[in-house]
Image (cartoon, rainbow, N blue to C red):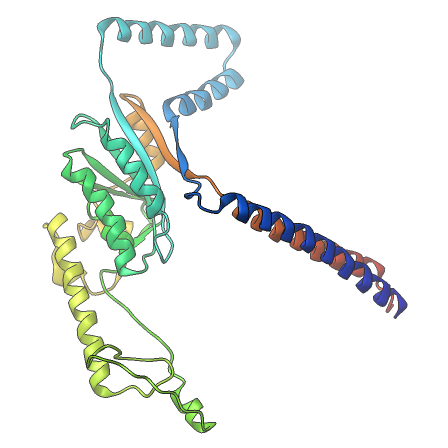
Length: 341
């Protein structure tokens, strides 16, 4: 028992010191950042042609004999020089990644990436979006889809690649692409609307707990978690869902008029192979395959907007890591000692 007491005392003192230091740092950071605007971010651009080339060269160098490798390199250099002499203008392919959560948080980066690309891209170029999302909030994904619509409105070809999933709000974004490519077993569809919430009114009533809901406007609150829900409220809530569903179907139909809407707007999902038969996608192909193909005839650039974290956020992350390490260390030492055996 003395071991536990001593170790607990040591742990408490250590945590107290760490928290005190972090509190001072956070206070200083708050003073320094007071009145300042957000930390902002910066645009990062990576030429994927160089990345693919480095992979190819590394493999060739490992497999081919020196003479064959040298000859191959000479042939490639000669072809590149001839292309430059002809003055051939290669098109640009801009690649964006969108990994969506329920709030479509990546929209903040997407909007800046699209804005940057629209300052330079022309109708001869192309934008490729590697999209992964199972959907989420209607208004959040509506804004994300609007960012991709800006590309179409500018007359720039837009291709959407789905390697894993583009469902519900994810498909709302994907449908804007002039061309949708899907991996054979990616999940697509879910053109529907869902809303759910628990209700604990009977539990509160059982324990004699009253919950009052005051509203100004007949339908200001239709369904609640704590109050008693009425049939009229349920009907209104369902009506709102139906209206949203109709808007969703209309949006998809605008960009994919070839779809049989009543057949696919049931909330179901399909794997890529079946989605191709439903015309939800145009071709079965992974993003890697497509970009490698495009890199042979165009300059392919990965464009990413990276947000800079302010000092408070960095301190918060450091605090989280420190506390996690302290707990892990404490548990590890406690497990090793095992005084109860």
